[in-house]
Length: 237
Image (cartoon, rainbow, N blue to C red; front, side, top):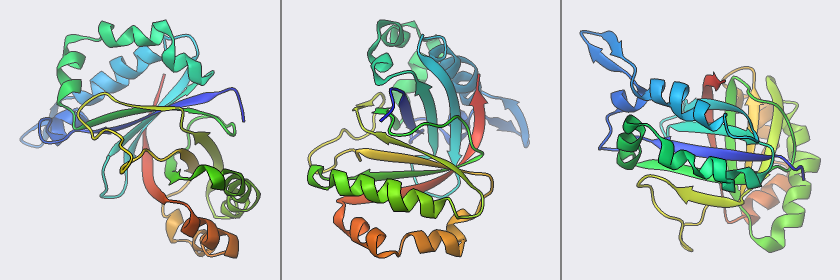
């Protein structure tokens, strides 16, 4: 495990924030008139976090499937403790009027802090977000499978660049998304696979990684897992 960590944020507008407003685009006669959400997130919200000591870089991704949430922002931090530092906590009371107006109306703005299990740099153009809910007694074998077989197998898929693994430290819902409960827990393992091309899940080499005897055993043994494709929206600086 590394000393570095990740702040991982799922975002979704919901019924009280229009898709156009959430994405920062208002249309009049098919012309883009004003970028509200994108301007706020890309030029105000995310850059403010990069002023906090210990935040090193950030990127924002848009889902390429039809599932929700539609947006992911990832911030690399020097250690998970940065997410509990006073300079970071102070940001919530220093937000602009539009930030204070927008966040309470979002259907979901879920922030998850995770210590790193491996290292890499941001960002790849295409991102495959994989989460697992792993019971404690399975931790050792799960990590052995992922590090010794699964990542090496995925590295053979055309376009694969790297993987970064994290384990859940905390999860906080900042808007109106569902709270974690014993019946609906947050997945405790996260892997970010980066690619230089789209369509990787359709490649036979990708399918082959899921049907090895060890993969079949682990995918059946874990409580739950999910895989979502995203494309880079912006590298935040």
